[in-house]
Length: 419
Ligand SMILES: C[S@@+](CC[C@H](N)C(=O)[O-])C[C@H]1O[C@@H](n2cnc3c(N)ncnc32)[C@H](O)[C@@H]1O
Image (tube, rainbow, N blue to C red; front, side, top):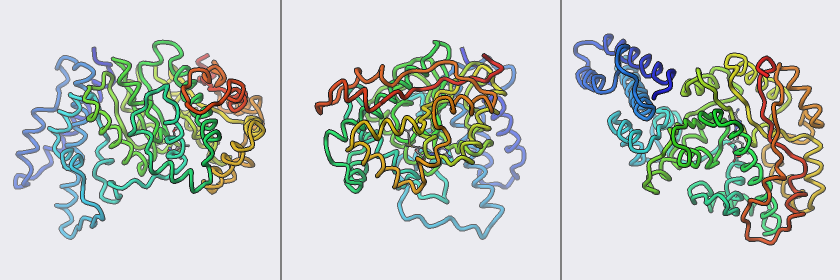
């Protein structure tokens, strides 16, 4: 059965696409082609509901069609328009994705769609990887040291992450292993917190997903789920292609629905637009991992206000996140000198005063922040509980693992009115 809101989305987008068709001039060179495509893709109000996978596939293809027709109309209305000269030729996959029928087939085969702007935005060099945050690459590489997830190489890029670590002087295998323990315990604890109650895990929207493989793994392991992942556009342009390549390479169809889009969590409109890819009439989980640490106090205020707006509008939604207090950071620095030096080196790269800017002295302080925004912690998952799952080659003892994660936790947060 299709989730009602996704069906409504297909219906709304179909109506929008027909309105655009009605506006095309009789001599417009693409009018006939556009109308033929519409016949294949659109639905009517009295049509039976589409299955979830088909709804996702049609939505992806319709969005693509609208994107292309808008682009075409802009060019027609501005005869002087000159497409920017690109440094890199488009990849085969980008060229293929220009045809809505290819998008439709690919979404049907893989259950996977990409926001069209991530494929074609001419203002961006969309074929080169120039992520906003190199920390995402560092985390991705370190994640690969743990074999408990069997992460495909696509999500743990050898060259970029390793070079960055070398540049930062993080070369000691034991230090790298301990940092991997930290990130992977966080990853597993996030999974446990997202799974929470069974119904919550049916729809997930992850923000700032970086190069994390969670969306890919979740969709492959959980039939009947929707996983929307997002990050800033410059990063997502690259990530979406990594995900698609991973699906194509492993030859299996995603068993859940997986969608990649761009979203800036500090921009409320952008955040809500990403959520539109879900069935907002049913429960869903917002996930953010490794994001909050880099915010200034003003950005944190904006982010909390945005989360508050989402949870107030959708009281059945849950926010799952890793809060890191100043006290957690001190424990981390005290846990191991190599890790302390390395973490500080990573912080120095982000050009922000990460430790002094952290507005959370302790867990108590996090609770006060939540309270100020009408939010409340419903549950917590200890990173300590995840350390024994990890399969890391380097010899790090159970005690070292426990020390490096300290008493960090993943928090499940709900609207105060919902609890
Ligand atoms: C340390 S990485 C963590 C990535 C991933 N969650 C993980 O655990 O591997 C931080 C991520 O936050 C993203 N980011 C930074 N500011 C953001 C914003 N305003 N909106 C959305 N994502 C943002 C960066 O692009 C980067 O991918």
